[in-house]
Amino acid sequence: MAAIFFRYLGSGFISRGLLLIALFYVAGAKADERDTLLVLGDSISAAYGIDEREGWVQLLRDRLAEQGMPVKVVNASISGETTAGGLARLPRLLSEHSPAWLVVELGGNDGLRGYPPRALQQNLVQMVQLARAQGTEVLLLGMQMPPNYGKAYTRAFAAVFPKVAEAEQVPLVPFFLETVALEEGAMQTDGIHPTAKAQPALLEHVWPCLEIILKGNEDVRSDSLCTS
Image 1 (cartoon, rainbow, N blue to C red):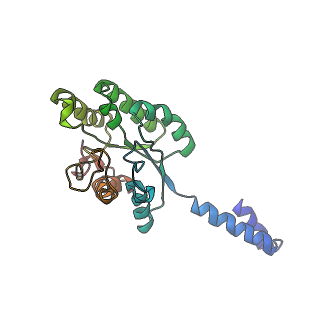
Image 2: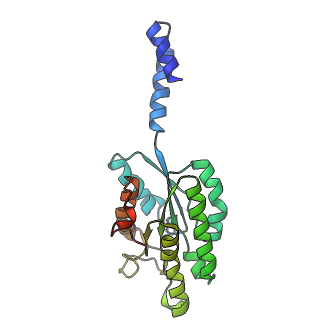
Image 3: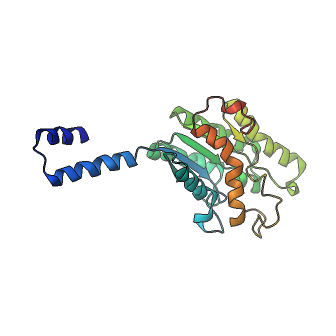
């Protein structure tokens, strides 16, 4: 459409008003020429208990803008979400946003509810496969359960994420809360959700791996910062 406007411009038939419309059209098209990164998470990525503007996903948006990286971040995270819920919502989200990248931060609520690790694994695998079928790159953010859930369950739960990453050949941040879980003042009184103070640390923990993916590094899985 823009090309048509400029052909008329060269012929001298376009008015000042139409010229402005053409320029606004081109500017708008360029503004929308951004690949989309979709974050599919639970309350941790939905900024539960804090101002959404202080959450790690918004901090990611800010960093991408500061670095001039043309990436649109869509946060589809919902408090209380499980892997089953994420899997049910994912087809519509993929269709609606056509993301180039998908960050899956799910599983914590499965663990808190004592769901079988096998079901968690199956749901994560299906999400990865759905995204890949659309040409979307996936990054998994792993989670762990507190020791009061018992050694057998906590080990089985934690093992799910590297198993999925290895089987599906996708990058993994093994434990998303690793840098804040035991830090004083980093967790809210419920002991589950990070505080606003902890959000920059969450971003810093995931950023090295995410940056590699966003910049199209083909050897992302061989990088020590992005392991499975």
